[in-house]
Structures are given as C-alpha cells and as structure tokens.
Image 1 (spheres, rainbow, N blue to C red):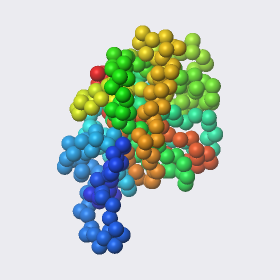
Image 2 (spheres, rainbow, N blue to C red):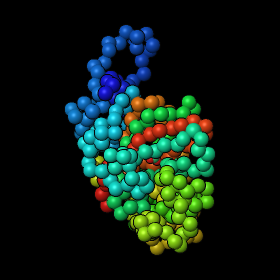
Image 3 (tube, protein in one colour):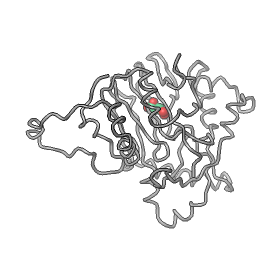
Image 4 (cartoon, helix red, strand yellow):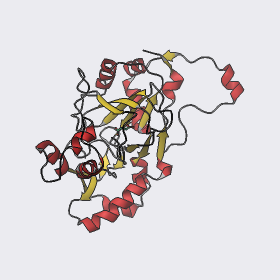
Amino acid sequence: MKRISATTLALVLALGATTAFVAPQPVAAKEKAPKAPKITMSEAVRKSLAEVQAALFRHKMIFFRDQKISHADQEAFSLRFGPFAPDAYTQGVPGHADVQPVIKEADQDIGVIFGSGWHTDSAFLPQPPSISMLYAVEIPPFGGDTIWANSCLAYRTLSPTMQAMIAPLRVHMSMGQVVATAQAYQQPDDTPLGRVAATRDMVHLPDAIARKVAGSFHPLVRTHPVTGEKSLYCDQTYASGFEGLTADEAEPLLKFLVAHITQPAFTCRLRWSVGTYVLWDNRICVHQAFNDYDGHRREMYRTTIAGETPR
Ligand code: SIN
C-alpha cells in the first residue's frame, strides 16, 4: 500500500467550516518545512480509529489521496467502522459481495447515472447505512466529481420557528422516484440502475423493489447517535412526502428543505484522482455524482457500513 503523509491525512474537507486542519503557509515556508512523518490510511485508523471517526463526524466527509488498495484491503478497512450494510442496488464484485462496483464505461450514453440527484444512501431502508466509502480506480480527464452538502449546518441555520414547526415530522423515504426515472431513461442491463430499469412499470415490481418503493418513515430532524448533532434527514431523490401531510402540503416543504440543504455555502465538491478514498456519514450530509464525462470511463468501488434505526 502506498504511504501518505500525516499532512495529507489531516487534509480533511471541512464542510461548512472555514478551514481544514492545515493552515495556509507562504510558499517559501512551505519549501523549507520538514517532511511530515509518513503514515498509511490503514495505520491511521489502527492507531486512532477514534480520531478518524471524530474528524469524519465533525467534517461530514473526509478523504485520503494516493491510496493503492485491493478489494480485500477495502473490506478490511471498512470493517473497522462496523459491519457491512445490506446493499440496495448491487451484489458486489466476484468474491467480495460487499464491495460494490460504481462504474460507467466510456461508451455508455445514459440519461441518469448511479448516484445522480442529491441523496443520502438507501434512505428508504428501515436502517439506512451510516458511513459510505468510495475508492477511485479510474477517473475521467474532466468531470465525474462528487459534491456533498452539510445537513447539520442546514438544520442549525433554520429559524427557531421553522425548527419547532418541523420537529414532529416524519419523512417518507422511497425508491419510487429512482424506479420511475430508471424505467423512463435507462436501458435494462446488468448495472445497478439497469436492473431497476428492467422492471416494466410500478405495478409489476419484484417484491424486493416493491418493499423499497413502499420505503420507510424516518424523523425529519435526525440526531446523530454518537455526537448528538441534529441534521435535516431529507433529500431530492428519496424524500417523497411526510406522514400526515397531503402531497400538496408536502411538496413545497420538500422543495424548500432540499434547496436550503444544498445551497452552495453548505457544499464542498471533490475533484477525484486515482487512489482517492473518501468516507462520508450519510446521517449528516447528502451527496450527488455528476453525469458530465461522456466518452470517458470512471471506475469506483463503494462499501457501506450498517446504520441504526434513525432517531
Ligand atoms: C454514490 O452515490 O454513492 C456514488 C457517488 C459517486 O459515484 O460519486
């Protein structure tokens, strides 16, 4: 495994915070700075899992550059954070059922890609995944970035009156919109969305997909089980209504909340490089991938860690 410096490790992306851990330095000072001690991503976690977790919970997503890891390494690294979550879309790669390929081929010309649209992973499950990890093996020469938005900052910046109004709400999270979009825009094939597109309509769905369309109701204001931080558990892709509200009542509120959470000031956007390894906590941020690199290949591998029933 390629080694990275502690400085790189410290380069956590500060969602909503003003600085990362590394203070800016004049160029001359940078040139003379002593070399930081080397440490691998796995070593960092072995030495201080608590510190890496604290950075993740504080910054919502963190990344390591220049990692060179196998599927087995990714499995072992992921398991330090908890057992794997059941995956809603893929069966994993051969021999590694929990390492999910997220691949778009150069000749794939598709209207939607896996991960497009602001979302928090598999929110329709009764116990959605807590942490997701994504490892870049091949990236396009342009495009293919991922963007995250800090849903804790979004909650904190609501007025106290709005916070009180939404406090009792339970949001309906459903795979329905993804199924409808895949049926309309995606060719049936052996990709995560291609398999969903193979369903013909909303009436004749296999049981497993019908259950995900029926989805789950979760608290709209979610409390992080470790830090106690509150977040808005709402997204553009899966949030489809609120318990006890009509569709007409729910629609403007959903629209407002998604626009509020994803406003540019609460976001950070990552330019991937080969070997970049990202961790994010689905309980406290939303994210989306961009479909803007037609003609080029993008190959990533994702693992997800089991979560709890949202409270
Ligand atoms: C995802 O939504 O998990 C995938 C994000 C990406 O491909 O950038």
